[in-house]
Image (tube, rainbow, N blue to C red; front, side):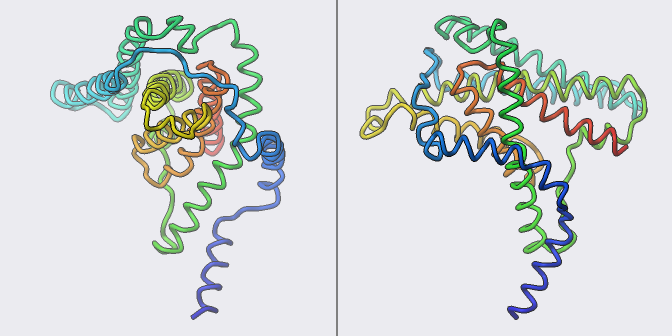
Length: 300
């Protein structure tokens, strides 16, 4: 029984097809992450000097742009099916991408209005300050380099255990946008998909999950007297990062990607909490998606 299990595990590891080249590519990121762990006492001191973004948001407020975002897309897709039947695959896909843009734009508008009212410093206090963009971009590249191997490890672990308990046929489903990008050859549609993946989605999702949910959770926890006992500033930050990261991962359709998305979201949340700048996680998110898009286009 043990021998059979070991043989099965070895076969699964072979199927993962991880070569020396993959390890070498990941080494710089793992080195950066190791240095970070050493300097922050394994993350315990990483948020020692971070401060909550002062705001007066009610706990329900971040859910409003989320509902508007999802509702706008759902109504648009339903209307398309009723009013525009008989569309070609290209036309239907193009309209779907436009609806994603419209939904995100509606969600962003629903975020900006309350942010200007409830955040001290308005958009600047929210973390949108263009003056810091060059510095945020440079640090975002370093952050992405450090986290990318961890995301890859999380996905490989998911694939490994999926094959171990679900059978050798288990595979991680590819993102719908990437599948569409590889199948459709029309330039206009491809450009729109790339725009949605690398610009529209990162901006909206970071404003929603990091900017609103994470800020609200941290502020709300810090106001509860019960949680203050024996807790310092950094614990509230990490709890907010973990909870907003879990929410970010689970709103995505492909459950097999949740572990990897959670690891990515932890990096996004930390970069926001550490810097107070929302541009930094936006840059990380955009570059992460861009890498997936490039690999898809090269493979296609």
